[in-house]
Amino acid sequence: MKKMNFLINGQGVFIFSNNIYKSCVLYFYNEDKSNGLKIKFTKNNVKVIRISTVKWLKDKNNDKGLIHSKGAYYWFSVDSQNQRLYAGIGEVRLENVIYKYNLKHDDKLFLESLTLIEFSKKSTFIKLIKDPVTTNIPLLVKDKDDLSMNDIASGMFLPSANLSIMSQKLYNCISGKKFILDDDDFPDFSKAIEYSINTDGLWCCETLKKKSTEFNKDKPNILETYLRITIGENSGESPGIPYVMEIWPSQHYSPIHSHSNANAIIRVLHGKINVDLYPYLCHDKDGVKPFATKEFNKDDITWISPTLNQTHKLTNIEKDSYITIQCYMYDIEDIIHYDFFDYINIKGKINKYEPDSDMDFIKFKNLMKEEWDNRSF
Image (cartoon, rainbow, N blue to C red; front, side):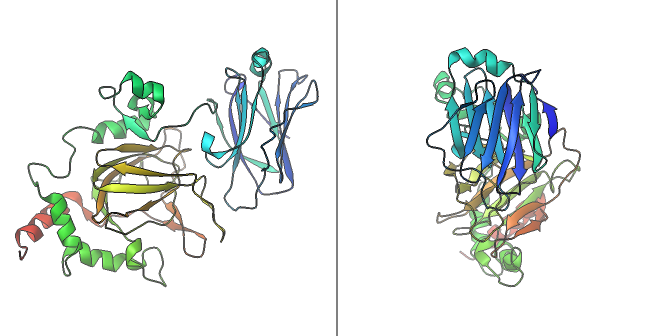
C-alpha cells in the first residue's frame, strides 16, 4: 500500500487512475488506524465501509464504479463540515458524481479525525486537493464591481478573487472596459475579419484553406479550422504564446481537446460560443459524453484550471464568426511544462497539437485595415 496524509484533517479530494478494471481499494484512517473508511471501487459500484462498525454506507442509486474507458480517472471527496461523501469519474465536480452519502451531524468529529490515506499499488495517484466537493462550480467570472449579493447567493458567478493567482493575473489583463475588438482605432475590425473570411483571395479565407489538414493530414476538413492571432511573445510560462485571439468562422468547430493542465481565462470579444464540456479526454472509439453544454456571449469571461474545465469542444452554430481572447499560464507549482494541447482525432486516438501563431496581432490588424480599405463594395 502507498501512504500520504490529508492536507487538512477530514476534508479533501483524492484523485487517482486505475487501469485494472476488477477493483481497487482506498483507506482513509484516523491517526492510530482504529477507525476510518474503506472505499472499494469495483466495476459495478463504489462500496464504502465504516471500519469501526463495519457498516456499509450505501448509496442506493450508485450503479457505477470502474469503467472500461481509456483516459478515465476517479476521485473520492470527504467533507467533514457538511458530513458528505462523494465519488466521481473525471473532473472533480458535482456533475460527475457517481456515489454520494450524507452522514449524521454527530459524525463530524469522526470525519475530522481522518488524517491518513492508504491506497493500492494498482492505483496511480494523480492529485490531492484540500477542498472537498460542495456545490456546482460557476463557469462565468465577474469582477467585484459587477457582483451583487444575489450573484454570490445564487452561485451563478465565480468572483474573480476566487481564481488562482495565475488566472487572476490573466483576468486582470483582459477584463477591462477598453479591451475590445472594435475600438476607436479600427471600429470596423470585426466586419473586416468577416469580409476577409468570406472573400476568396483574402488572407483569412486563404489561411483557413491551408489549415484544412491541421487536425487530419489524410482528410482535409475546412470546418475543423480556426485562426490563431497571437499577442506578445512566449515567456516560457504557457503552452504557446500566452495571449491568443482565436477566430472561429460560422459552422466551424474544434476537435475534443484539453489544455495542458494550464490555467486559462477566455473572454468573448465578438459573437457567441457553444461549448461542450467533457469529464476527461477519452481515447477510444466510443468516446465519452459531455456533462454539460454552455453558451457564452459577447463580453462573457470563463476560466480553466489545471483540474477543471480542461476538456471541451467548441462549435460555432451562428451565422457569423465568433472571436475570443484566450490567455494561458502554467500553475506556480507546475515545473514540467507540457507544451501541447491533446485532442481526439477522427479515429478516436489522442494526438498532440502544438499551439502556434498564424500572425502577430499588430500585423494582422494592419492587414485587415488594408483589405477593408481596398474592398470592392
